[in-house]
Length: 462
Ligand SMILES: Nc1ncnc2c1ncn2[C@@H]1O[C@H](COP(=O)(O)OP(=O)(O)OP(=O)(O)O)[C@@H](O)[C@H]1O
Ligand SMILES: [Mg+2]
Image 1 (cartoon, rainbow, N blue to C red):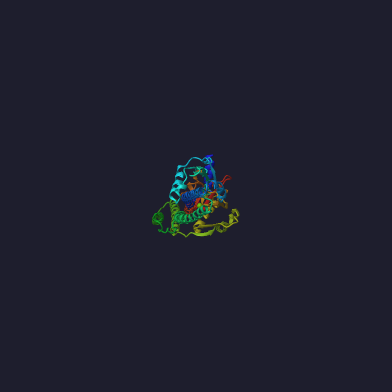
Image 2: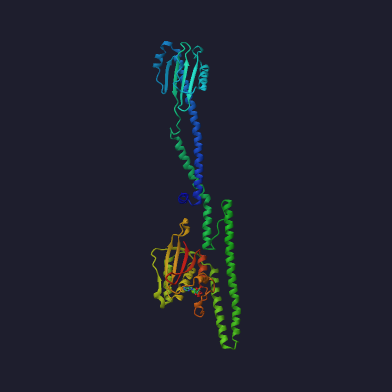
């Protein structure tokens, strides 16, 4: 039961901070408005009631005066002749008859007595006695006046109208107008106030894809400006850290070249020809590794700008180029068709290089490659309606031992089977690929296929 409720609540509960805040404010303001209007209405109803009561008392007194002025024997006719007054019952009796209206009200008696003594009323016509009753639930009142001459009782009863705040449309209209006006103002205000949070989130997202993304404006309310400043500082530090590391890599690579050249020259003096060749082979390999490192370092220092590009076209170009460079394997290079266009933000040359590394690996270690593009809508970030773009680069080769699936991403790591450096690469391909993809907010994962072979799963942000 509780679980069903939480599920339901999660489903209907708004997710954005702006909607949540606006809703909370609107409910709060709505309640305050309703209370204010209620107090005002109750006050007005009270006033209406007092006026109504006073009017009824005045009328009852006037009737008594009319009747008391008439000769005692004509009174019954006079009562019959009175214009019928809505809600008033008037009759004579020898005993007071309050028509079962209870309880007796001393207050009402006093008010009427006071009225009769204060207004210009002939003292000889004043009633000998006044008995009054009032029922606050039915709002019925009854007054019995004892006439001074024949001692008979004049009984008057009436019912006050029950107050109804909805009698006129004022209350609902006022509530509706006030609620709409405040809701609009609240929505507008909250949207404006919360907007910087969205900007900050977008900036954080951008930073994840591009460390060189432009800084946030450090303006707006105090806290927002402070957060923006802190964010910019952080982005700047990350950027500097990455640049420092790249420069260090380049410097080391560069400085290693001189001793290698010196070693190569010195190797010429080795007499043992076999040893000399091995020496030169190792130095060549070392040079190759350094050159690859330097090339990667220079590329990442350059920082290609991020642009919007169409992914299926890029994949088609890549496949075409791969077929051109490997005409002997052209039949085993496949691209599964994807009909619609997929626009992404990326660094085109870098992305191309990352995908090319993976495709060439498949071709080199398995002799075939199949590329598939897929859009994944089921990612946990579906709250933001973000979708992920997946590119599968699959082969039918030997695959990799489970324990090495992550290890091969380390720089210069090559597996036993491909130890032959003369034919193989440097072991930097996968490290570069991962670094490029992560630098654009994406990633790459290696997994063995059930049917054999390796699958490289490239994840790109939308
Ligand atoms: N599709 C694949 N099938 C089997 N093994 C693979 C595959 N792709 C990569 N590997 C293994 O992972 C290792 C690392 O690959 P990586 O691309 O980083 O380096 P490399 O291909 O050896 O050299 P290069 O720097 O020229 O790319 C490879 O040496 C290979 O053993
Ligand atoms: Mg490779």
